[in-house]
Image (cartoon, rainbow, N blue to C red; front, side):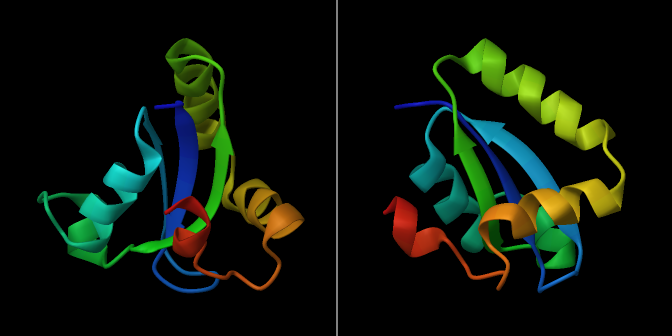
Length: 94
């Protein structure tokens, strides 16, 4: 699979979670189905609102670290640059 960086939200302008994976459909399914205890399960963060594909895992990890350092306003601008309605992008990746 192709590495990806993704952002999940609990609702529009709600709690955000940034992650990285080598299998985006599988990982988002795991989040949506609360397969692991942790932040997204605890706070109900299940809506895929942003993702970007990368050529290799190292570049994806570096991008995830960059986004995680950003303030909330920058993350919201990134999401709204491609998904102004905060739609769940799940159907676009399956």
